[in-house]
Image 1 (cartoon, helix red, strand yellow):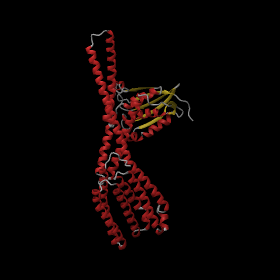
Image 2: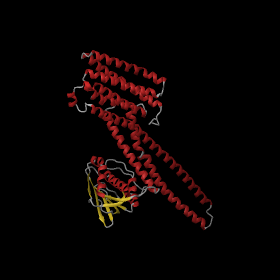
Image 3: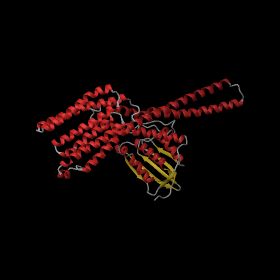
Image 4: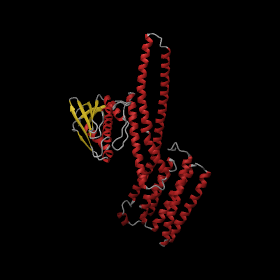
Length: 481
C-alpha cells in the first residue's frame, strides 16, 4: 500500500525519471574509473566493468520507453531498483580485484548502497523502500563474504569493522536508514492530513457562525415588530440583548482563534511548503550546507506549528471540560530543570542567563503535564521578551499549604493596558519579542485556565523597561523520595 495517499502514478513516474538522470551522472563517474583501470594495466577488470556499464546504459536507455508503454506500472520501479543494486554490486565486486579485497567493506558499502536506498524514496512506493533496503543488505553481504577469504587478516585487524562483525553493523545501518527513509514521506503525509483537519474544522466553525448570525438577525427583527407588547415581552427583549452581548464576546474569541489559525498557524506550513518545493526542484544541484539549513528550518517551523496546535487543542479541551485532571506530587526543582533544558536552544541563542533558585524538597500537588505546560509557556514568554544577554530567574517557596512559583525576567516589561488584557483572549495585544519572535497571547490564557483547574492562581507585576514578574500560587505537596 502506498504511504503517499495524495500522490498519483505521475508522481512515481516523475521520481523514476529523476533516478534516470542520476544514472547518467553515475555512468560518467564509472567511465572515469574504467579509464583509470585501463591506464593502470588491469585490462581484464576494465573490460568486465565496461560490459557491466553497457548493460546499465542499455537498460537506462529503454527505461523511458517502458515508462511510456507501461505508465504507472509498479514492476518497472522494482525492476529498476533491482538492476541498480545488482549492477553496482557487481561493479563493487569487480573493483575489489583491481584495488584490494577489503574495498568491499569500506567506501562502496558506506556511500553507494545508502545512495541507492535514498533514491528508492523518489518512486513514492513504501514497499519499494523496504524491498530495496533488504536487497541492499543481501547483495552487500554476498559481495563481502565472497571476497572475505581473499582479505589479508592483518588488514582486518587494522581497519575498523572490516571483519564479519562489520557486515552485521552495515546491515543494521542499512535497515535503520531504510526505516528512516520510509518514515520521511509518512511524516509529510501526516502534516498534510493535520492541515486538512484544521481546514475542515475551520469551515465548520464558519458555517456555525453564519447560522448564529442569521438567528441573531431574526431575533432582532422580531423584537422590532413587536415593540408594543407588554412588560413580559420587554423582559424577554432584555434577555435576548444579554444573549447578544455574550455572543459578541464569543465571536471576539472565535475571531482571535481564526486569526491564530489563519495567520500564526499558517505561517509554519507556508515555510515548510516553500522549502520542500525548493528541495524538490533543486535537489540535484543544491549545496549540502544550504540543504541542511533548509531541513533545520523545516524542523524548527514544524515544531513551532505543532506547539501552537497543541496549545489550541488544550485550550479547546479545557473549554469543553474534556481534559481530565490527574493531580500528583511534582518536584518543582526537577520540573524547572527539565523545562529549562528543553528550551536551551532558544535562550542559549540569545545569550540569556537562566537560574533556577528552587529547594530540592519543594513539591506541588497538581496535574504534572499541565504544570509542565505552564512553566514552558512562562519561560518561553520570558525568553521571548528578554533582550540578548539578559537574565531569567525561576524561584519557588512554601507559604503554609501553598507553593508560590515565580518567573522573573529582565525583559522589556509591560504597560497598564497590556497587563489588563494579558489573560483575556479577546483583548490580548500581539507584540513581537526582542528578536522579532511572534506571539499570539494564547499561551498565557492557557496558563491561567490550567492553573485555575488545579486550584491555583496567577498574577503579574511589570513596568515598561523593568522586566516582568509572574507569581503562580498552587497547592503544596508533601516530600518526595
